[in-house]
Length: 165
Figure 1 (cartoon, one colour):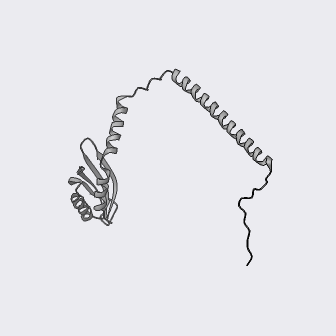
Figure 2 (cartoon, rainbow, N blue to C red):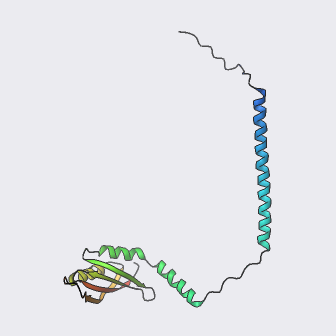
Figure 3 (tube, one colour):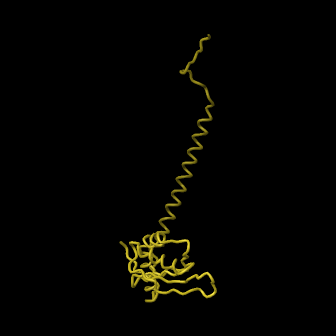
């Protein structure tokens, strides 16, 4: 086996110009960054001064009807939708298809319209909705057989008090 001589203390002679060139390039990059920062800082101050001098524009006047519409929308968004949808999902049936869900925020009620394959399926759906915790006073308010359906399909509407518990 041969002995390997490793000398970590010996200095290598590199190009004396390489280090100086890298130092010069770094200095140019730092100078460019400083000048760019100075320009952006000055521009920011000028834009801030212009913005401060600008007079605030008056807000557009809002009609009472628009305020009422916004208030109703906010009330609808704030309703406990999760409880309603979980009640609807728990009462779901293959024989019933929902057509509309119409909440009335002023009264705290919801009207659910749908179609069922027969009258018994509609009644079963109303019964299942009545068993949910988030709907009270569930009532079948309208039902009518579909005119052109020989199988006895029924259109119905259910009214319920919608409460968050």
